Image 1 (cartoon, one colour):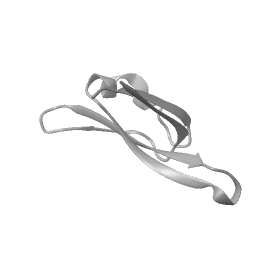
Image 2: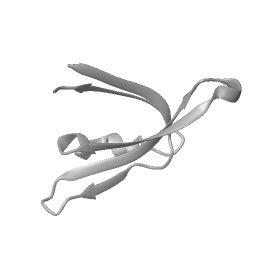
Image 3: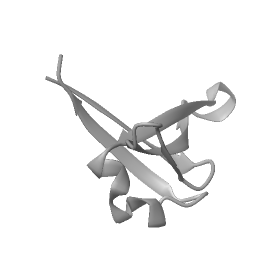
Image 4: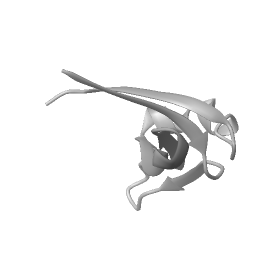
Length: 76
């Protein structure tokens, strides 16, 4: 199992969508800064939550400019 985590600020409000089969998808984008001074770089990370995770009340908190910590466990 691998862990993937990062911090950043939301670039826009989260957007709820659904597939033609009815699967819920919550999409959002996070700006993540690395480095400092003249070496600073901003990475834009597109994220999506599916199914029950997307249907929770999280979309009410994922608003533009909010700082978040994203943690996920990846299983291969």
